[in-house]
Image (cartoon, rainbow, N blue to C red; front, side, top):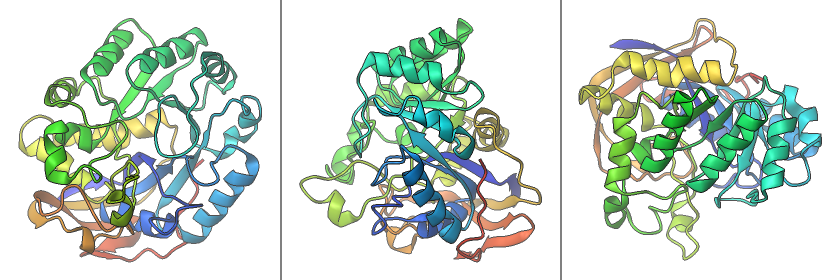
Length: 350
């Protein structure tokens, strides 16, 4: 058994408000605890999107009533809220710019808006971007010209991690994250998973892209699941929305990298705790830890998961490494496959 600090996932989608049939603050934070995460940061592409004070209040009210682990929320960037978003800065973890298509309505393509958001957002609050390929370069440059840092979400391609490495070497203030599905899956896995179920943003890339991420893990500041649940009926429909549930399988996948000698346990702690705390300015959680059996094997079954989505792209896979116990602020929150923390016991971190 090994003891880890309470892990942090800085990138989850909990679908509350507007999509609670597939996840809400209750089921999503239960999934987090089952996966060893005691803090989650929720993205703003809900319905309505979290782009103003009214929508933020709706999300925070639901979280205060339902969340079982600690939490924060991001505000989304739009063409219209360059100035008004700054008034919410103290209540949110950071601001998210969507520069490529994904689930929701927050895509923002105009370069002048990107520049304006980079210039207006407080320098001491994180600024994040869903930025793929050429928009990755645009986001990094706009933030650099504004004299501030930027965090690139779910890097998925060799060209992106190469650009970020070069930017860091030049002293540019950029951080980035990689998700477990981009470290383990590629286009070769689509047929096995199923076309609709494999749909995700950023899309699964080539095996060479996946291998480039693994070869450049020293450039990756943190891991983030991009937990993005949808029901199987939705994934198997002609529309098949993008995203995978990931909170309950992520740690075992990271431990797979440890077992393979690619990273160490200390690297897992660094990328799932130390660096997320630093990048997102998160408080300590006293008397909080996770107990993990790194050698326990288990077969992944979506039906057994806490997430309301009840499916996983790793269905039937045998993983090695299992969360046995989670203690949050001195109280047992998860043990032996059971979530013990009650709805509403989580705390707002921002």
